[in-house]
Length: 319
Image 1 (cartoon, rainbow, N blue to C red):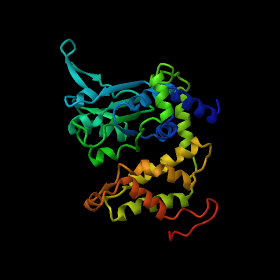
Image 2 (image 1 turned 60 degrees about the vertical axis):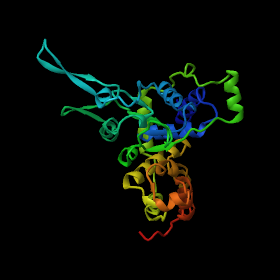
Image 3 (image 1 turned 90 degrees about the vertical axis):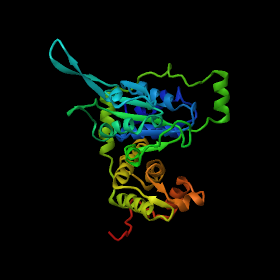
Image 4 (image 1 turned 180 degrees about the vertical axis):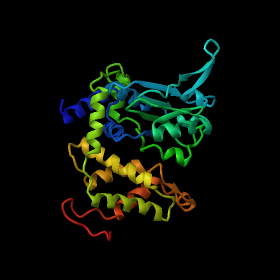
């Protein structure tokens, strides 16, 4: 199966479960190929969980789902050691995190202590229990969902936790025609029709091809300028870190790959930058008083930072 055919086949399968949301499907696929984690923030009932389960089926990934509630403890996720009287030894019982795709449902409803249990495994791909580290299976992706800020019974994720997610996106309500079809029972949000079309070996091969996508130095400078602009903006208290810049470069490569190219264009960066940066910037009091949103700040930054004049033409950035 060729790359373009494989990409379209996966997207077509996921479409069976989630209609009218191609942008979300492609960006989720790009984040998976880039080796990143995905945070989906939206109101209940729009298909957040459906999207995660559909991808796990289409990509033949072993998935585990956990509903994050206030009483969930770190050991419930990572696993624990239990003493066996017969052998006189402690035996490790793995938690649900030991899978390819871990769905953390409503992650902001659990305690900060439990949220922080995911920090190491999301960054380094290992689980440490009582001093012993164990690698999680490859590939490994965390897809977390959360209710919008202000929902009852939620705990805001700290900046260090948010920074572990490559992208944050919102699915949004379906369009009129799609919602009417759902009411008629023609589409729904069931994953029963989704079939495995890509195995793990093929997925890992595609991830390697994404890593090999060429990024010109002018594109890297452009990403850096965008990141610096978030740090210098008058409405932003905390701008993008270098980790955010790295995530942008990786996501742009994956997006270019999904478009059938082996090189990154400035348009790829523009497409993915809001999803990379939205959850990484912290607005200041001035922005809150003026009712300025993260989206409007990022739109302004993108419009103000000069793009490379042409992919094949040099631009002087003073570096």
